[in-house]
Image (tube, rainbow over all chains, first blue to last red; front, top):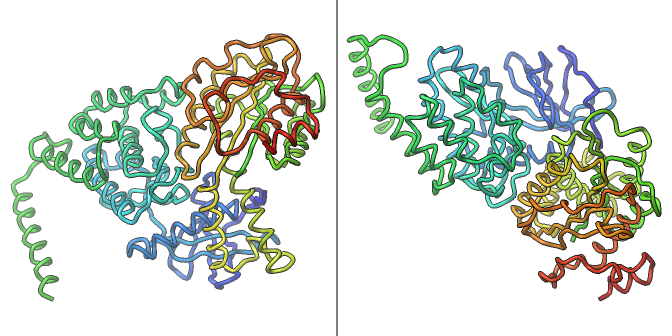
Length: 307
Length: 258
């Protein structure tokens, strides 16, 4: 098999596309996965993330998925820039260029913000993103902490599309801990409920303070059951309030990700109305500001509506 | 129809025909042979590692030496890669035929053409009919690893069942539990393995490791009885040794034609 994993691409190297001629300057290595390496690059002053694939076939499958998505949806059109080949050390290496997201994984984000309350809005944004994918006929499949970046005020982006699978097909790439097949909770057919299961495990992984989920990794898969995850969701104070949601996701009873999103929003907003605040002090001016921001929002909407 | 044999072993063969020759026979029958060497502690031994590589080489497949915790993932990966690679080779051949020498190399194709070709490969990989026969070495040293093997079988079947194209699995182990029998069938072609938890309990603890003869028998089964239609529950019972005639062109061909 052709692999260039032994080739190191030093900072400052110019990567030039053989077919389209785009030139990118390598800044640093961002990460390495099973299918390739991702570098932070610049074209002019604009930063991008550039992924070089180890295997041309696997790489092209990811590119195909991204191409197809960017034809279907404006947000992925902005995410995916181009694909090409580079000549490095006499080897031809396929690469593609995507939007650079200056973010961190969910656990790190929560740690930096110092409040677990952010998880509910991260969950909301991520579920919206998933629902959008599902609407276009795709399943993300390889949902895990490493594949999601959180930035700004809980903005989320999926950054690895190797697992992307058309609905109804068999999931090809997954991570055991998040895979419902490994938990004896269903098959590996790509459907909304497959991603929702993985999403539920992801939420548990992000909020797990006891490293309990981590310990499950060493357990033989035939001994794993959904009940263990449900118990975790019940014991963890941050997920216990959404227990009804976790039960449906882990048992696969949501009909669609739209339904899952609707319930998440309902539970989270209800929770925020009644529950005590995790951090921060209530202040009267906050209400005024809130009212003002609502007015502003309504105003903006009306403006665009009339324009 | 795509046919694969995955051999799971942890050491050297020591009886009968060379497994490398057996694997070459399998390849000649259009069956890809992949080999996984399972180690727990220490090494497989130079000889074992070499043999594993050679069997896969002759069988047109891949070989990996892994810890038992990596077994499940390795079997998944091998099965999938073998399918896509086989299809890629067939597609490349066609392209070379049309475009001339070197024209079929994925890397040499312009991006839009490449995208189309890979789309076809992806599509075929998902929908092509697939038969995978697992051949498990159950000689004494493998005993502590059999729980991991059972888990890998369960997991592979789960993925096979999720494919759009029809997929079947058969499971064999060697040496057989009856003295003199090289291989024993645990399950003929199936999509359901209800009895995985009970698999490989009745095993022969004698010292021989007849990898070659066992591989030949399974080749015969996959080549001859690997038809997509006509599988019956009755076929799940292990065939008596006499129906698995000693390997020979006649026996093989007649089985194949029927």
